[in-house]
Image (cartoon, rainbow, N blue to C red; front, side, top):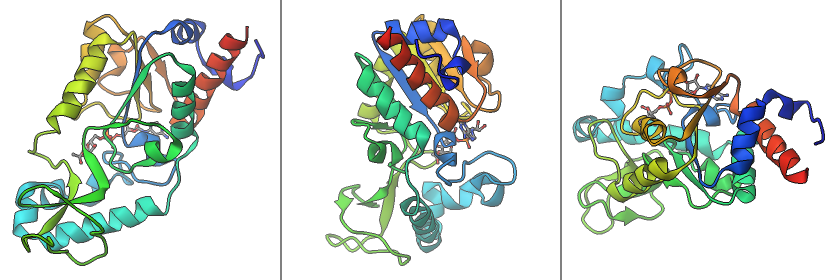
Length: 253
Ligand code: OAD
């Protein structure tokens, strides 16, 4: 044991559960990318949904009505993402995954920062803002970026970001893999998510229902907090490196 001060933020029971775990699931949300400078959705003042109306920008109806505006908004967000880097939280999850016997990373984020931090594979429940598809047949369209709405090179129809909008189904195979992992895991981390958007929020409930230890990492309480065995109340960029340190300390004993 090194007695590292960061690792001491981690309760002993959690450090033991982590080092004994057979399958760990990490579910992340916008909060894990907040320290990279990407705005979350629901935080007062800074959250995207406090400044923009989702029904005008993140629904299939909005895109059908005004595809140019929707495309421009995503181009702006793509630019924000391109200017950022993975933070200590993303890097610590990738580090934990390297130490653990088995883990599954599920994210609601579309920013690709987990992949850039070295996690692979990543189950992307809501798509990825870096990819584009034909709005008609959903086949990939390469190199569709810039401010101006591109046309599909095959059919001439509009191109859209490869993300899930309100009212749309999540990619079925990805969701099923995430559900199976949640049912089988012994430790489930919910990191940086307000835990209000379903079906993503259901994963922690599935895990808890199947007997897993649920841990929440979030500076604020959420509807999940009372079901979580541990609440690490602080930023992901502090708590996740502390967890990694505690696992390294245990493995060094
Ligand atoms: P939200 O904006 O709803 O929640 C972000 C959470 O991150 C909040 O609970 C914050 O307290 C927490 N948070 C803020 N800073 C943090 C930090 N440094 N470390 C850890 N946590 C922090 O974002 P999501 O839960 O991801 O969907 O939202 C879920 C979905 O709703 C998104 O994927 C998006 C959105 O509408 C679609 O666009 C379909």
